[in-house]
Image (tube, each protein chain N blue to C red):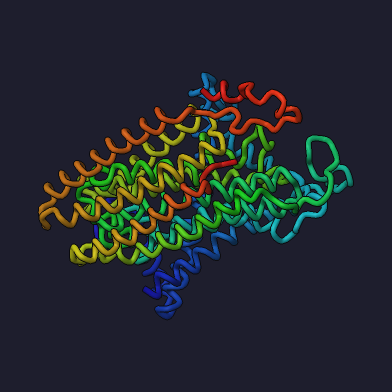
Length: 118
Length: 412
């Protein structure tokens, strides 16, 4: 188990390391001739107006909130799924109850119109 | 140990470990060195595979669109991606003014690295896997989230409004489609009783696509969406927001987003083959590991090819359609499938595989028929597109009140 985690750790470092090295090498190989116009922000030829990091559509925020609830709750289901084969039918029904509450969450958000793209 | 030809890779690994031990190194160091070398080989191999994948994708894309595809450099254009690689390596990096340097440079590395990380837990054959991690499926989900982070960072760090729009769409799309993906992965985990990918492959005496076809379909659809390919390519819609999150990238940094994209498509096909199509299972795969590897690659190629056909033949969704498909169809469907599969699999008499398969196939069939009925009803009752919902307030509305507003006529 510890060896498996060690391998995963090594693998994660290496899989970030290889692209990093490749980009560094490419940066050394390529020419470096910055110019004000070349470095300006691309916006179809016209100059960009104002700050980039501006207010954004609230709709995205709503989806992010719904996602947070669902993903966390779905992750809770994984331990149950692993133990599924040794569970009794009652434990299964308890989890079904949990999933129904989850589904109720979707229906509530749907009812509230949070799922309509405006 | 079998002969070399039955298991060439395992043979080489054993030879390498015995070589290190022969030098008189301590056991821990041998383990560490073999891990580092193995990880390096696997990660480099997956990256080298991309060169071939680019050729495959361009060739198939060309054929679907009635073109020849690359055919000038080398036989059948096979050397073309290598030429492109060499060229992109010597291109200048143009960093836009005001970009958040750290975030901007981290994004391409994360988007490639997160895809390579998945390869650490994929079982390629009975004795050929990076790590026998007992929480493999959870690891895949977690690492997938890291790739989404790469795209969001790219959009945020570029100091460009098109890129920021792409990042917003990435938030909406990639995060949303993670929910049905995670929920559909629960069913194989449930049937196998383990999150370990090796155990999941071993549990598939009958491939899970037979026992859970709807979960497989949901996983396939949401894996295309997670990959951000047509018909779900809203986050890099060329005709709407030029290229989305990667507008401001150039040279190899730009290329790495596409390396990540091509590799992700193949990796998701690989995962589909492992989780739903039985992985390396096949005739004589237990005794001759290399055959298992061949079976896995054949299955992966079929799924990958299907994904390519979907990519090249379907037009792009509108964003509201895309979100509606996820939250109003896939999420309820995946949760309902999860519940019904759990109940009926438990109710079916234990120990009899044939009965279990029949019960699960019937359950999936019923869910499918119900889904069709619901969808047909939803499309029949509602008009596809409402033009104007509210009549506009007019200055002189009080004077000719009885006159019918025009919008009402348009609605019907």
